[in-house]
Image (cartoon, rainbow, N blue to C red):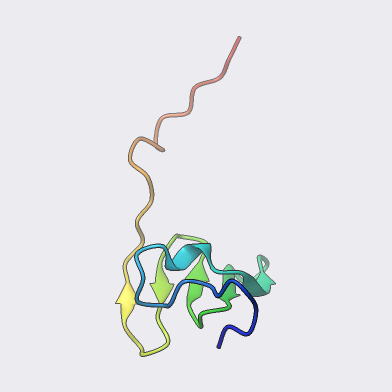
Length: 68
């Protein structure tokens, strides 16, 4: 899918989320990356071959700390 240089990481790469945005729809909660990956706001992913990557939020986001 990627037509620019340097090419984006493939959908099978560990760094697939660093591909360029093709479409961004925050009101619907998803973005399409240049490598064909659908990236959802909950950090879940749908790969071009139909595989699902479960949400993988960073640990420790449940505690919010406010600076005084």
